[in-house]
Amino acid sequence: VGCRIDEEILRKEREVATPHSESIKREINREVGKIVAQESGKTPEFVHPDIVVIVNTLYDLIELEVNPLFIYGRYRKLVRGISQTKWYCRKCRGRGCDYCGHTGKMYEESVEELIAHKALELFGAEDESFHGAGREDIDVRMLGNGRPFILELKNPRKRHINLEKLQGEINKYAQTKVTVDNLRYARREEVEELKNARHPKTYRITIAYEGNGKLNEAVNALRGAEIAQRTPTRVSHRRADKVRYRKVMDMRVENADACEATLVVKAEAGTYIKELVTGDDGRTTPSLSELAGMTITVKELDVIEIGDEK
Image 1 (tube, helix red, strand yellow):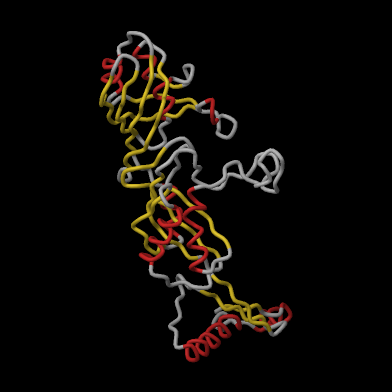
Image 2 (cartoon, rainbow, N blue to C red; image 1 turned 45 degrees about the horizontal axis):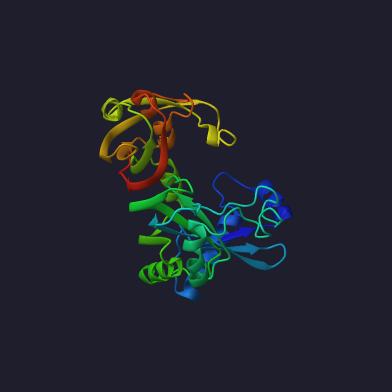
């Protein structure tokens, strides 16, 4: 319970206040809180309240501030061509135009929308925000144990839904595109923890090449190596241009023939995997292409495991 007091009353209170007097705001909060608790049969929660009741003494109004609801889980993206979050049209900024087919979006659907649709419906929430522990590119699948995420539901009318039911509804709605599991209720503080977590990741990469380079030697040289990565060309328009140092924790050849190979790579959080392979015209060094002495391209890329935070 909180309150908004007429400024004139607060001014007069300051004139007569003593070091040991209780403020009128604190007294109103306490006494109104007692009444609400008695009438509702609810125990006050001072740290993580679901709803804050605001008593406006100037206009004799009662306002309700409904705090967001947070749900943690892991998602797997089973198909390529889906962005993690809603990607508004770069031309119209979501208003709708010829460029985006009047959808307001660059892509028809996203992991966020496929997960949030049923949650918004079941909880009666007005809006949502999606928080992921990192993100994969649109053309990359997220497999294995899934990527941690927190869905923030704003102004929910319901706060207690069976999350097994929600999980089933989401997976049914998203069909073969996205699945979720390990759903649980979360705290607001976990959003920042999720964003700051440094999870190593394991990838399966299908590469293509021409020539008689030294692929196996290059893989062995990169295993355990530290690489320097200048911001890749493909994201330089939205990321600061700087050099980042990352460790390749493991790399091995799963299978190979004359023009293609499949690699499994485990790397430190924040590693640009495509550029680790291609070199990005020298912006990543050493790279697989550089050490193998031939041009190598990435045909397909999957995240197959999100490791424990380091």
